[in-house]
Length: 255
Length: 299
Image 1: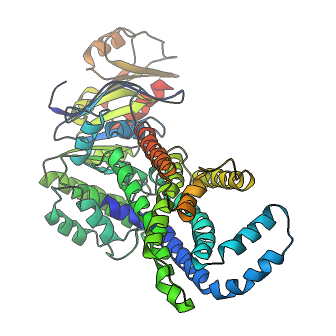
Image 2: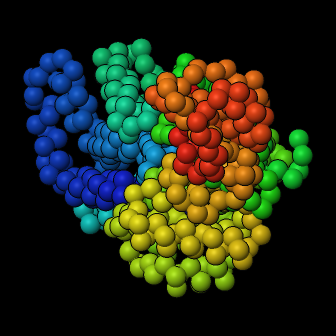
Image 3: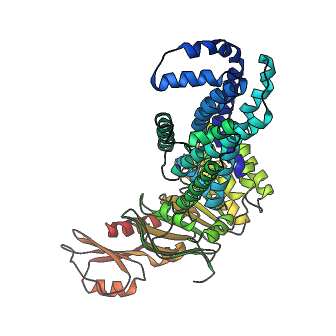
């Protein structure tokens, strides 16, 4: 029943995330015809700096549908919203329940703290996995409506990369939630770190081939067809280490 | 340590960042007893309960429940499997319904008593589909009690079970508790600062203050052994130093000298008569007086 408790605690965050990401995926598909009309204009723009580079690159990517979907969805919308909801799903748990809201009741159950935490992590990660895969499935499903097709294989690979790399933010928020009694500090610290990494990726593109957001978008796969194994492995190890850290932290905690 | 004690602590200490919540607490709760755990606010009652249930780790000393070390995680799970607990805040999940809360809890206890669940659902009419957050304090207490009583537990640990309840509801809860213990073989350990309710249902008592045990034992023994000796003198009462054992407190007010004894009165009376009082009265003391005198000594 611990899975049920975790589900009850996170279901609204999950359902809101699912609705937002699904809407976002649908919008990406249905905006393609309008975007395709703007492609010739992109090359005539004379904007300089990061913005100019972004516009030109978006124009280049949108020349074919696969590039457009990758640029808009897998490089932009999904990592941004995915990171937000990974952090949201990772926050909470025993400490934030606080006395009077179920914490002592939970601790009085014949379940070890490791088990309590394990179920919370498993449910949160499962929800995050759904957020990474399900909205993306609407892209191949809806693409024929705009006269395009999109391969299911692409969806699976990009979503897998999204979920493995995004799990780092989930795990970080999860770890921080075993250190702070409120919901806000784990969330703010995680999102601030994500924002700093995103900024680093924008400013120092050449220096950041293994930036987490590049692993999330599976840019290497999009451009070369190779999976970012090293990045994925690093993310998986970092996530596992943080989840393990969370179990140590909660085991030492006095309530 | 002997198995006939369900709960035993030995020189139990617990510091929270330099604040000493428990300072060498010694407790012994016999199997089958209803033990009232009395103390003022902040005396260390809740901390002791948290240590016993593995929610907080002791700084030093020992805490054993069912003979199992409460600070060992595996043993602690086993202790909680055999224990029903109601916290001071009546901690429950606000987002669950009454029915959901019962089904959720039942899933953790293989010895869940469906017969008792039925009985208490009749006795405490609780709206099954109402969310816990919408329950009144009284209903919340009844639900918390139902969840603790139906676990098939050998030990009930209740932290201020009647706090915030009106007298009628308090009486109903206490009666339910007494009836439950009468029909089931179990030990009850309940903390309170309501002396009257401890007096009403407990057969053992432990009085603590500032993290230490002051008085402990069977309530009948305490009532038997504790006596107030009142000596009245012609003039100002003297300031004697009694040598007899069991002198807990001596209070001098004008012509009256009051001695609280905890171990028989004869040796004290012998010494007292040498002071030539005009009158000597020996009166039994209530639990309330024992409690107040004990914690006053600490002050």
